Image (cartoon, rainbow, N blue to C red; front, side, top):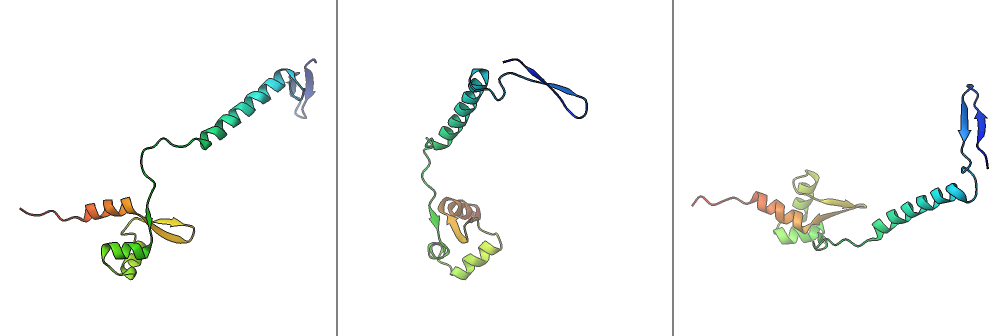
Length: 113
């Protein structure tokens, strides 16, 4: 197959390589390379992480209130004022146990002695 000349409305001439739109040849090679890249990217997302960190443990407002020995309304108020870290999952508010532990560590008052 030979290259074809295409004239655009602006007077520019473009050369269409013989592999564009053809079945087999270089066009097929390029398509197979694209498919291989796409497959590689899909495999990347399918891989399990080798991260040794445990799963995130999420707590509800009631669980946080019970753990901190405060009322649920106080937890809600702190969350609304952005005083404690939280996650929004859909319409639900959840708290990461590790985030709360770090928050408590930051709020720790050191002894004088």
